Amino acid sequence: MTNSAHIAAKRHVGSYARLRGHADGAHQQIGMWAAKAVLLLCRPSDYIMHGRSGLVASQRNSREQPETTPMRIVLTNILVDDQEKALRFYRDVLGFKLKADIPMGAHRWLTLVSPEDQNGVQLVLEPDQHPAAKPFKAALVADGIPCTSSAVEDVHKEHGRLTKLGVTFTQPPIAMGPVTTAVFDDTCGNLVQIAQRH
Picture: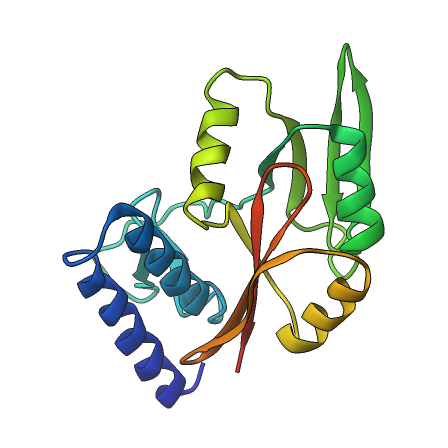
């Protein structure tokens, strides 16, 4: 990340942080997603994930940091109301590649990966059968909050491609400092963000 982009990212994250003290919960969450989009599209060496508390600057050379074996994210999940429908959408429309499809009783262990990184993080299409899942998803959708975010090379181009395929966008491409984002309905009870770093 260039110095100017880094400064812009920090400025926009700061503005969204200030929003938390002056807006309702929904707008706070939307602001946090925009801030995360800024930071998640930085180089991995610039930022590291810090649990559920957000993103913090990497301290690669700090002598205070004990030597540890780095953790890697290997799975991330999205709660879906129908696994077969979700597979058609995420594979055939969005373009992810099927990685695993294993019968598990009434459901399946169903994962996909980016076609450009087939040994990378797997997206688990997880049934939303837990009693808390559907109310949680519905609350996020009602407030316009995406449940996850994916990086793309060109948000406007991807917005046009997906729109032609019938995908419904709840937020068209919007420039947010060093990133442009858009949000669409995944047909499975979720909103999903796509983001491009300039």
